[in-house]
Length: 317
Image (cartoon, one colour):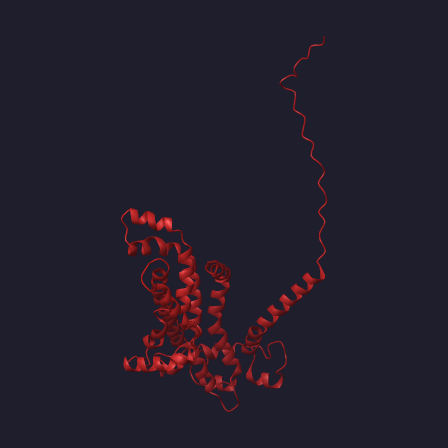
């Protein structure tokens, strides 16, 4: 009878046999996928074309634009339009390049727009968050009916509220002031309350119940627990509110009458009205428009993904 002897301890174990890797086959794009990508590229190009045309016009000279208006490249390339916007040209130089020669207090208008947009954004975030938390977490009689009535404000066109708001601002003595421009939208809007309410409703109630057992009140729970957890949608709403307040035109036009309260969007129309005898200063106007829109484009580009994700999450309830 044969006796089996164990293998020596230093004998290496046999290496595992790995099957050969199968070559990865790349799927050929289907005709539908190619058409979809072509349509998306076309939409992107159509969307970016106005911004490119603004930059092309701003980098051209007014005299050259009249001679070759269809040229896709800057005609007689120069920085004269931007120099007139920032007040770096003398009146003689501005008139020679087809400008109006009038001064544009750009930095003052930029400061006014920043103050108004910041004031509206900060106050609206705080008051809308408190109202949204009350609609989502507090139980009180008639809550749902009041919220439905509040949401009905989304169906009221903004133009219907301009005259009552103007009369109110006039009675308060806030015409031609930055506070008068910011006041109608400074507290809350139906969209902001609805947006934040959807997020607060998705928060787990167990956290609040644990805080209540520890002796915390509703106010403390809101500021110390719920509000920090809502930092992402608050940031998204802040970006959207800031862009909306920055781009507002008609209401600041009704309320402001002097440079002390005139915002940048209204100043552009004033710059447009300063038309010289040679025609509209298109290079200067497009340069001012590009400078005014550039901060908002950068802001939206940085927070674009967060905005889309927060809107999708808040609408899941």
